[in-house]
Amino acid sequence: MYVKDNFIELITSRSQHNMDIFTDTTYKSFFVNLLTDYLQLSKSAKVQTVQLSPATLALVSQKDITFPSLPLVVDESKKKFTSSLSIAIHLLEKSRTKHLLLGQSKDDFLATAGLFELLERKRPADLFKHFNDIFEKKTFLNRFHVTVGDLYLFAYLFDTISAWTDENKLEYGSLFRWFYHIQGLPGVEGFLTKAGKSAVAFPK
Image (cartoon, rainbow, N blue to C red; front, side, top):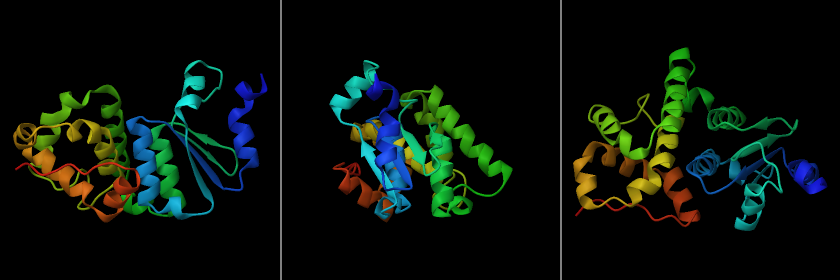
């Protein structure tokens, strides 16, 4: 079946862009969309973001359309990036911000890779205390300013913290302070508005 076997190639072959980004409704896609917007790549005529519709996602689920995984990035050479970390690094390299938002040292990379791997294995509720303890002493995760790790953790926790009660926000006050700070950053706040996401209110 041509559509099943060549759906991605069909879209990218007709694309006039240097990069095609395919996303769904998971936190990983939320992160990729956030990072793309934060880096202002979404303003580039050379980058196309495709949010798959519920109908298309149903076809993917039924295996009528084959994707390696979602989110998925396909660059101008038709190379595919499927893991959250490889996508993040590719976007940072394209925007020439890798040194700023990831770092240049091996330790910087290992810290970020370790975070991505941790969030793959754990449920948000299992990590509240862990990150609350971290943010009792730190403003950001890995450096003295926001990095890709902060944006990934924010995307990972967004739906969960959006549902928190005031009691939750006070119980994990350091984690919520960090979250509240990140959502108020200009590049993040603007993305949430465009995505139709409501900012999480400070406890009363």
